[in-house]
Image (cartoon, rainbow, N blue to C red; front, side, top):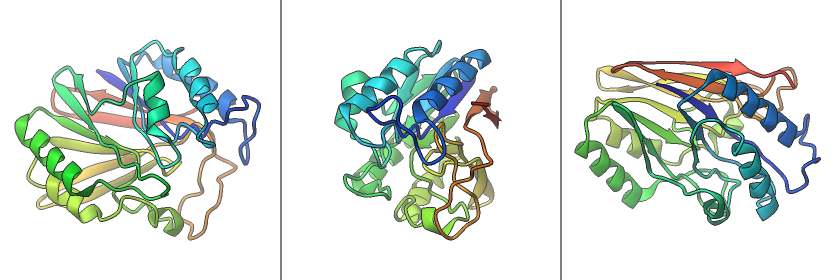
Length: 244
């Protein structure tokens, strides 16, 4: 089964609006067209749909996402308003993916750039992981592992140790996928004797310059998306870039 991940649209209500270096709506349209050519069975949209948190921005997102030829689902990022998202499409907590499943975690905190799960969400995650031992993906907006850029690592998932503690006994968790970082990223978190991969994804909007202490846009990089091919109990994943 093939999945696609797209993320960080940062749309504004004005369809002609510019970002720092591009046009978010046109870039999203180009990425959606490219994803359709890959023929995924499911598309994961991992947050920051909106930049201005307006109803109009979500209307534009829903119109473009309706062009996807595969089912899609989304979860909120730090710029989002989940109630407005839910008016267009539900925010599911779990996806059935053949012999796999994906758990979609809501790390959004109103008015904050960082992400949190909290005791109740972590307890619920532990229960869900213990109840089903099929190969599992964990999908979220905020990154639970440092990507090497001080400014964005300061607004990742708060108290990630608690998250990793919940995942540690569950060897059927195969990977964590996140948005937020606006760059291709692959890292690993050691959980006892195993290395759990963590993957970030390019944005459909502006890309962030990797490995810097202060905010900077990577003006040489292009919008992109991630593909995930699921086998019986293994996965392969890579990033594709899109010309705009």
